[in-house]
Length: 452
Ligand code: SAH
Ligand code: F3S
Image (cartoon, rainbow, N blue to C red):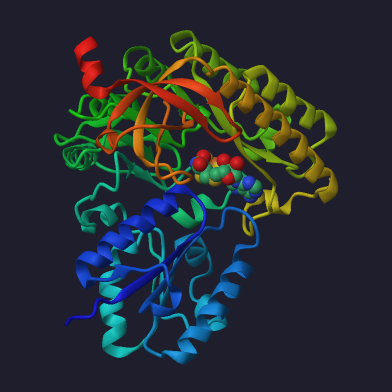
């Protein structure tokens, strides 16, 4: 009997990394037959997909590699590979500090992993490839495989914005958009496998500018319309967009394209123009509010979530007050908010900082408490309403129930039957909890079609 080789993969950080890891799993399965395992001790290859956006990523990496070295001391045949943004940043120095590592790859070279593994197996020499070879990555990935009714599709890579605090442009390279037809083809393939919702991924999706088949440019707004026209795709989400590229043609799509969900994640980072300027974000609070105002004109109920950095070097009480004021004014729903963490090599890391860590922690606490309260209020307002949800599967908490998501990303649990999984149902919200909602089915998808 042929024993399948096992792959253990650990992923840090963002949705981009989660997407990359799922592609690595599919790729190594198709080229080498590797099967994913959750048990680290039984793995033939250990793979770490790192993220360096915050925290002490380098230290975390070497701690993890120390633990894996112990496994390799027992089984010399294990291959250890490190990828992602820390690999891109640290490069060769990883081999020096952790000689048990065999392969180092970057976010743009993961498609070369099969070849790197073969080479390593043939001569046992460590291999590194952290280059940024244009967009070839996508040409070498296997056909997409649906993992449920919702799927991620990368539409662009990298970032050109160089916000003064951020490491991404250095680790993931310049903005490159995938050709439009390639994206559409991938989504059609997924739709044929039952996918109903797509989440278009990229560091700055609204800076998208891809080529069409005949060499013309396709903007993000145009791409959204093309995706909405694909048979079977009823919901479109995207992460993440930048206020500076949030042009009026995108707002026009919200006006006439119901497939675009009534929920937008639009990172603002701070409510103080002084701090935004130091962050090199290239917009003012008035401009940010103007986008939201126009959006709410065409989509009155749209919920907005955001990213915040608290305690940027020199952030005063007054700057923080402006951030809190913006949080009230926009009435944000949820946020990813963190204390500023200096990233080596970025301009902000050289700014002097007179705000104590204690003060920063207090500000973060105040900010998160307020936004959580607003999120609870938004959920409470949904009580008694009718929501269309996409049924993702069986509830993790109770196997007798199903779970799915509303357009505004709330998890809803309800009693239903297995044939509803992967389809839409209309639900009345009958209870609201801190992290989920409970609902009662009003109509199944078949019944909707009779009504619509
Ligand atoms: N374009 C991507 C940005 C990735 S970084 C996106 O918008 O998703 C994701 C978030 O991490 C940023 O919006 C920012 O709020 C946070 N972040 C980035 N660098 C940081 C740093 N040095 N310290 C704290 N938070 C940071
Ligand atoms: Fe980072 Fe700013 Fe780009 S947060 S990913 S440099 S938009």
